[in-house]
Image (tube, rainbow, N blue to C red; front, side, top):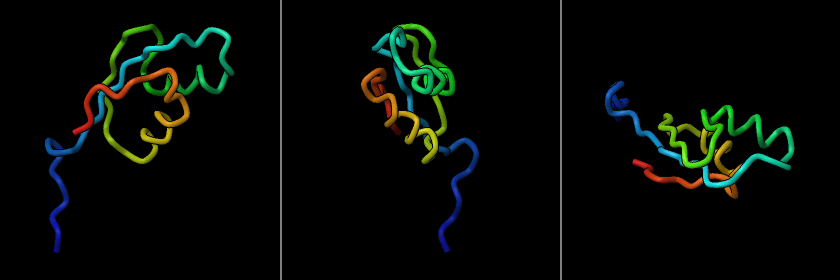
Length: 69
């Protein structure tokens, strides 16, 4: 049986905001806030889950994945 990763071994993903939320739909702005991004060139390190990956996919034109371990 496979072991579950320990709390320190959880994979993370780092995203950087490269696009402005000005003149974007409200849902896209809310998604950026959910990713803990609100200004250009800010980075946020988040746990790599399907929910976070889905949020990144929705605003892929506004963010860049810097590091995905």
